[in-house]
Image (cartoon, rainbow, N blue to C red; front, top):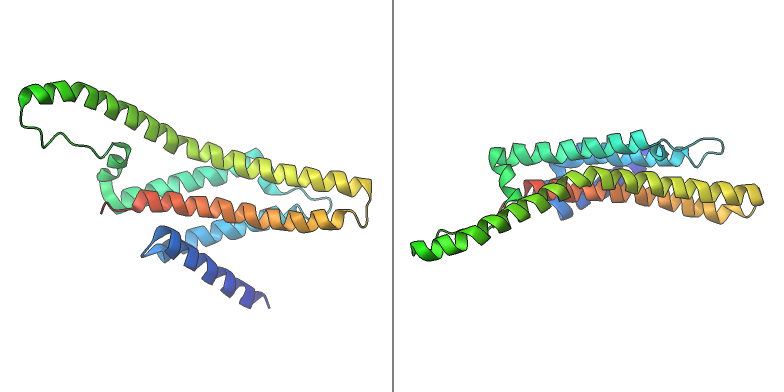
Length: 193
C-alpha cells in the first residue's frame, strides 16, 4: 500500500532530521521530504527503458543545488538574523589582552588569520551548490551509462543485477543529496554552546 510506504518514508526522514539537525529538526521536513521524493522519482524515471533521468541534466542538478543553497542560507538568516554572517569568522577574540604593545603585536597576525578564515569559509559555502550539482549529475549519468552498456550486450538476464544496483544508486543519491542539505541546514541554524 502506497500510503504505508509514504508513512514509513516520512517517519524515517523525520528521524534523520531530528538526528542530524537536532531538536526542532522536523520543522524542515516539508522541504527535505519534498527534495528527497523529487530526486528519488526523477532518478527512478531513468530506470524505465527509453527514458533519461531528469537528474542527469546539469540544469536540473544545478537548480536543485541552488535551491538547497538558498534554503539553508535562508534558514540561517531566519534563525540568527544578520549575526548569521558571524559563522564566517573564526571564534577568536582579543578581549582578554590588556597590554597595548602585546595587542598591537598580536593584532596583525590575528587580522591576517581572520581574513584567511573568512575567505576559506566563504569559498567552502559558495562551492556547496557546485559540489552538489556535480555529485548528483555525474553519479546518475554514470549509473545510467553502465545500465545502458550492459543492456545492449545482453538484453534479458545480464542487466538484472545492474538494474537492482541502479535502484540502489537512485535511492542512495536521493538520500545523500537530502542528507547533505540537512547537514547544511544544521550548520546554518546551529547555536553556539
